[in-house]
Length: 329
Ligand code: ADP
Ligand code: NA
Image (spheres, protein in one colour):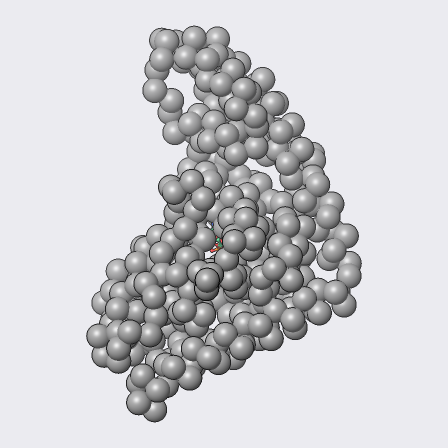
C-alpha cells in the first residue's frame, strides 16, 4: 500500500520555541514512522520578513539541529532546506495564477505582517500562502502538521488546488491540517496575550534553546493575580494559559492537583509556577543539550540537508512533470 504523503515546514527566522514544538515538530516525529514525510526549513519564507540574512545560516543549522534533537531521523523522512529544492519556484509561479489577490489581501496573517513590518510590505508577504501551497502541493501531500495559526493558510492551499483542478484537471489531493488528537494546537504566550511566537515578546516565549535559568525566570514572571475567591470560578485567560502550558509538560496528576486547588480557592500561584518551571526545565534541557552538540557538527548537518534535498527533488520533479502536462506546457 502507498503511504499517505506528509509535508511540514518551519521558518528558520530564529531558534525554535515551544509553539513550534507542540504545533509542528512533535507531530513530525510521530508521523515519520507512519507516512512518507517531507519536512523543510522554510528559508525562502523567511526572506519575506527577514531580508537581512546575516544570521540565516546559523539559524538554519541550529533549527536543523533542533529538529534532529527532537527525534527526526533523516533516514525516515526527507529533511531539507526549501531553497535547495528549486522546483518550488516553478510551481509557485503556476500557482500564483490560481490565486486571487482579493483573497490574499484578506488573509489575517497578511494583515498582521503589514502591521509588524509597515516599511516592507512586499509582494512576497502577500503571496506567502501561495508559496506555502507550492511547498505542500509539490509533493502532492495530503496531511499537513501545523498549529492552529496556520488553519487559514491550509484553506487557501485547498482553494488553490481546487482552482488548478478546475482549469487543468485533478493533479493534487486536497491538503488538510493535521494534529494527533484532532484539535489543532495553539501554544499560548506567557504574557497572557496571544500565541507564543518567534517575533512577538521574546520574554514571553519559551525557546528550546533557553537555559534552565531563563526558563525559570520567564515562567515565574507569567501574569497571575491574587487567585479566585469563589469556588469553581472560570479562569481568566492568563491563568488558563498557564494551565495549558502545564498540560503540555507536566503529569496529569500534577495538573489535576492544581485544578483542584484552583476550584477550592486554595491555589498558590507561586507554587503553580515553580512546578511548571521545573517541569519545563526537565522537558527542554535534554533537547537543548542534544541540539547544542549536533549544531557543532556542521559537516553532518550539511550532509543531512543534501540527502534531504535529493529526496525532495525526486518527488518535486515527478510532480512538475504531471503539472506541466496538465497545463499543456
Ligand atoms: P513562528 O510563528 O514562530 O514564526 P512559523 O511561522 O515558522 O513560526 O511556524 C512553524 C510551525 O509552528 C507552524 O506549523 C505553526 O503553526 C507552528 N506554530 C508556531 N507558533 C505556534 C504556537 N504558538 N502554537 C502552536 N503552533 C505554533
Ligand atoms: Na506561524
